[in-house]
Amino acid sequence: MRSSEFRLAATIATVTLAFFVVDFFYFPRSSVILDSYNWFELAKVMIVLAAITAAMMLVEWRIEKDRSRVGRLIAASAAAVRSLANNAFLFVPMSFASVWFMYLASATDRPLMDQTLAALDAAIGFDWRAFLDLMNSQSIVAGALVFAYHALGRQIPLLLIFLGFTQRPRLTEFIALLAISGALTGALMWFVPAAGAYAYFHPQLTDFGNFTARAGMWHFTELMRIRSGEPFDLVVTRAEGLVTFPSYHTALGIMIVYALRDYRWLFWFVGCLNAVMIVSTLPEGGHHLIDVIAGVVVAVASIVAVRAIASYDRGEAHAAPAVSQLTEGHGVQAKNCEG
View 1 (cartoon, rainbow, N blue to C red):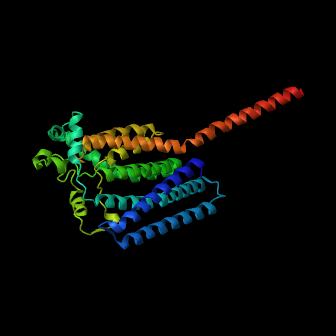
View 2: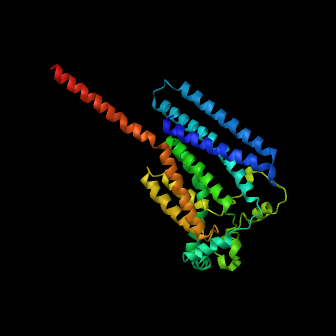
View 3: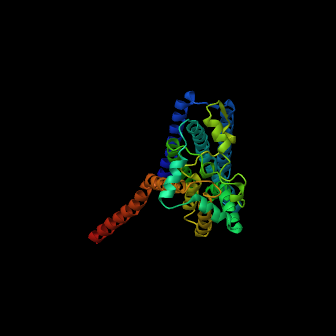
């Protein structure tokens, strides 16, 4: 493992630990009950991942001396699967802890701040209702927005597999992006509880007939149950996305495109798709425009942080050739002197 990968892995582990510390601190005071089934499922997944890693290491060891084309293909595939399992070993606990935190943060009786968010939209000249009417009036545009919005969920597993088999360092980098952006998103949603633009503006069904029937309101029933103060049994694998501010769809769309920056043919295709997706977070996702702006800030801040964490290797990489050249230069001078 390169030093940059190690630092990124340590960052993911640190964020995960921070989430768990906060979770355990607030859990006794919350109405959210974490079913013991969750721990069983987490342990089961971690054991499976450990078994896959061990199996792939065994395959690599057995095939190590096979220099045939098939042997090299098997070895490369085993290394890619092992990398996926190792990174999943970081990703799964981080996801578990962050989802738990999201529910704990949502279990609050503090007033929802949608009125403030709508006011901020108005202050920058954005009318959410007028935008919804405009998008809904064009069925083809609305259909494209719905497709782009829901395509994001399919991009994540495909991206993880793609990076695992092509650029494994980029896979760890992407999970580090998820960790840092998750921490930033968690902090913001904690301070800015909100239900979304649909819950605030209450449009009629005919006003968004070209979007899905529950556009922007998938999470609302769950959110209200959590905010009621009644005991709530959380099963992490069935969790809903409760974050309104910032728009994590926006942050995720930008980070996925960034992860594909070395592949121009994918970069531009996915970039265009996710640009449409970001627009769709308003009428289909039910976000205020200020949510989307905050999502952009989260993505950019996460990318800057990850680049800073991993940047030391660039210095090492540039230093090595310089040292080599310097050494070679002294060697040439020494030979000239001997001559």
